[in-house]
Every structure is written in structure tokens, then in C-alpha cells.
Image 1 (cartoon, rainbow, N blue to C red):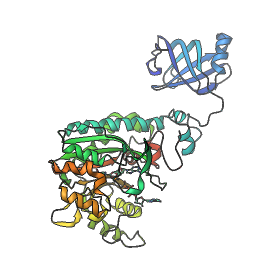
Image 2 (cartoon, rainbow, N blue to C red):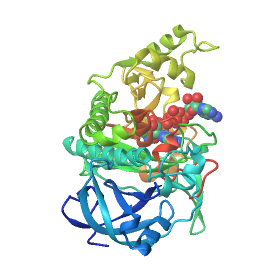
Image 3 (cartoon, protein in one colour):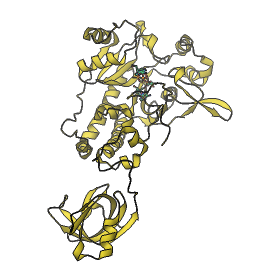
Length: 434
Ligand code: ATP
Ligand code: AMO
């Protein structure tokens, strides 16, 4: 099996062994064809029944679709074959037989509902357009890592089992840790901040975050991939610049290296890399513009969080990625710094895709006394966070950063209807397996 030829490497004139999945069997009477599929593509296997050994024909044509077979034979040029070549088999090995009844149809002729697809990801990813999402996701992470390298960041890995939450107490998954209460981490927020005061200064992390979100929406997961960035001596404007460069690099990587995948998804013609210079809108401007659309039943007032319909209405108007800046301090977390000249306003920002929020970030409160005050104001016990706050007494520079939802980036880039489509094995309210 190790010496097999990939289907697209089978060249006319050669003898080849190709191994793959039986994609289709077409029996026309005297002649029959198997279309064999592997990761590189498809190839036709020709069975001329009268001219071949009966056993060979029986073995070849007796298999069920999606079985794995290995075929050895002469590779011949054949213009009527889908790829211009075919194999005339001398030997067929049935390597792994598939049941005749499949839970979903990998040829895509019969559509399946998302839950059926998620229950049978192995078969689902045999479809070109589904496989393409995950090839693109992998390329996206590669491009993002490359851009972080351009930004002189060091990749870090922080613990996912933690003693305290950071993003609001209700969304934590509790676990038992040697008899003590612990939690799955909601964000690497505090750890990445601790690293800007270390010798590393500028860091990124790509890793899982866990949020016990009660609601079931097309854009929330209970386990998501967060792309986090944090840098010493950055303010929120620098952080937004870095954020924009990472998002654009992700799009550029896909445009350059994933043409085939974009074609499989029907996006080859429409896929566009966003232009530099994402507009930056203040929160105040954002609520005024949302109110002016008349899409909301109730007008927003200063201090309100933006409801989903409001985000959509504004997104439709903007028609591109944009930042919302200068959020009210009271609706941003304790670690976000207030504006120097107005403590009602924060340095927090969100990056929005027209259809949803992609990123939250901001400059951080690096002054020890202010930080401790912030904990108290949010009803959090500063002592529980002492491992974090105490480092602010030993030379913590001003810093800023952000967190980008990896699946939301894939989802918005490819226009997927449901965030679960961007995850191999999603975790949601109803789904803990596979
Ligand atoms: P973040 O990542 O900061 O949490 P988000 O876009 O996920 O950003 P959240 O603050 O988590 O927003 O959640 C609030 C958003 O989720 C709101 O925009 C709200 O409209 C939406 N939301 C909350 N509960 C539900 C629900 N039960 N059904 C649909 N949407 C909901
Ligand atoms: P926030 O909570 O806004 O900020 O999360 C950052 C981004 O992560 C993505 N995200 C999610 N994606 C899918 N399902 C979820 N349940 C989910 N929750 C969040 C979103 C969101 O914009 N510590 C801050 C970041 C920072 O300031 O650096 C934080 O976690 O795309």
C-alpha cells in the first residue's frame, strides 16, 4: 500500500497501483466503470467484461460504494474518461469493505441535514466542498501564524484548566481538580497579559476557549478556537492595526493558496481580500447610525450593548469590516483601560464583520491600584486573582491586545450559515459526541 500511486499521478504508459474509495460504479452492460477517489482526485477504472477474468470483474464490481480498494493495472489515455486517463485493472484488492447502507451520501447527490453530517464527519469530509472548509481553515491558521511572525510575536500556550474565570462568572464550565473546584478557561486573557510584562513582550496564542453559553445560536460554540494577541507598549490603535493586518493576511493566504478549495465551495469568482484601512466608528456613532436605520423596535440609548439585529443593520450599511471604538467603560471587562480624558469611555474595541462580531480587544489597565479597583467595581474578589494582580506591582508596561474567534473568521470568510460547519466536532448545548 505504501507504494501506491495517487490517482492524479497515474500517467499513461505506466503500470500503477492506485488505492482509494469507490466513488461511483457505472455498469453499462458489456462495460463497467468504477470511479476511484483519493485526496488528490478521481480516476476511472475500466472493466471490459468479455475480455477480463470473471473473478476480477466480480471482485471489482461486487464492492459497495465507499469501500477502499487497491487497483493495479495499465494506465491508458482515454479522452472520454473524466480525467483523460483510465486504468485497465489486472488486480483488484478489497482493502476495506463499506456497508451498502451509508448514513450519508459522500457523492453529494443526496443532501444531508447538518446533525447527520456532524454525526458522520468521516463520511462528510469525503465531500470536496466540506473537505475544502477544513483545508481553508488550516491554511488560515498557517497564514495567521506567519503574520504573527511578521509582527515579531512569540507563540505561547497557556493553561486551559484554571482557578478563576475572566469573561463574566456565568459562562464557566466547572470541573473537579483533585477535589478542588476548577474551571475550563474562557480566555487566555490574564495569562497573555502576564507575558507582556515578561521577557517575551509580544505574544500570540491559538487555542481552545470554553464557554458555557446557554443559548443555541448559529454563531456560538461551547468550545471555540481563540486567536489571541497581546503586546507591551501598544495602545488600542496599535492593537487595531495588528488585528487588521492579521485578518487581511488570513484572506490573502486563502486567495493565494486555496483556489481549488474556493472553487469547490463556489466562491472562486466572488472571494475578495478586504481593503486595508477598516473604518473606525465610535460606539456613540454606531448607536446613532443603528437608531437611524429604524430596524429596532426600541431606540438604543448610551450604555446599551448592541443587539444582534442592530449589529446586522449597521453591518448592512457598512458593507465591510469595521471597528467600533470608545465603548462605555461599564460594559467592558475590568481589564480594559478607561480613556485618559474621560473615564466613562473605555479603550475597548470590537472588530465587526457586516454579519457579526469577530474580535474584542483594547488597551489594558496596567496600573496596579486602578486594576484592583476595577475588580471591586465588577464584584470580583481581587484576592482570587492575586496571582495576576501582584505582577502589576513589579513593572508591568502599558499594553494592548485582542481575541479573534477563529471559527467566526472562517464562517464569515466563506459565508457559512452555521459556525458548526467550521468545526470538525463541534460542542454545543445538544452535542458532546462525537
Ligand atoms: P462575545 O464574543 O463578546 O460574547 P458575541 O457576539 O458572542 O460576543 P455575546 O455578548 O456573547 O456576543 O452575546 C450576546 C449576543 O448574543 C448578543 O448580540 C445577543 O443578541 C446574542 N444572543 C444572546 N442570547 C441569545 C439567544 N438566546 N438567541 C440568540 N442570540 C442571542
Ligand atoms: P470576547 O469574549 O469578545 O473577548 O471573545 C473574543 C472573540 O472570540 C469569539 N467568541 C466565540 N466564538 C464562538 N463561540 C463562542 N461562544 C465565542 N465566544 C467568543 C468571538 C469574539 O469576538 N479576552 C477577550 C479578548 C481580548 O480582549 O483580548 C475576549 O475573550 O469572535
